[in-house]
Length: 290
Image 1 (spheres, helix red, strand yellow):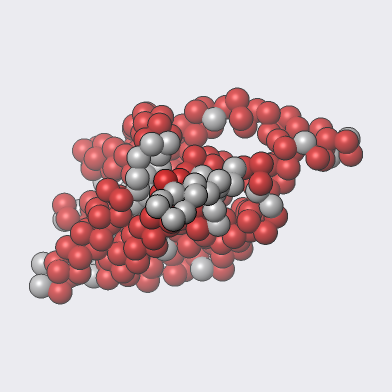
Image 2: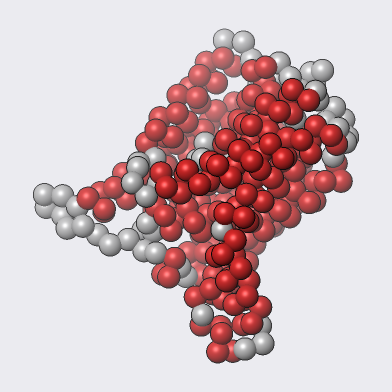
């Protein structure tokens, strides 16, 4: 991998990690469209350490409170009812599905799941799901001629059941094209949570899974065509761009619809199907390239 490739892929990772459009799919597609070799699941996981570091810094006050309350709840029974302590336990519970499935499906994640036809399918499918979830949320928030405005749930209402459902939604993002934020935010909206609550828990829930995955894949850095230097460079680029994107996105979702992302996902999926169908791109484009 050249330094220019790592620059471009780092920018793509930072720009797409927090948006509901799938960073892993865009890394895969960027390489395929440019005629580069697929950067691989290990490169994706390691560069996500950069964007997840941006989450740690952006939510540092929330994370500090949660960690402090959670550790105190281990020895102080009175703290176990504290909202921040509960959030700590719910993040742990919600991280179980992706941990189990990530290890179980490791070979598929690194191989068949990176087929461009599957990515096109998940881009369109999850785009439709996100669109439905967004419309339901908008209807509750706006009310209507024969409907009153419906109050949606906040993170104070988060239960163990909902935390696990969020966790299974996150695990769907093991398939490129689904999108971690897209799946968890869609799940949250369908369960009746506000946009801000769904996004905030989505980002907090991603921290253990992404950091664990990235650290696990560090052992593969430097193997094949992806060397240590470009991987680290891309990770730093992803951090800087990712921080700017998460700050913008958290403001965007408080007043805006997810429909631009829905339309983008569907159009990109259709384009990808068309290019593969016309023979312009191979379903495994880049996997054996130089």
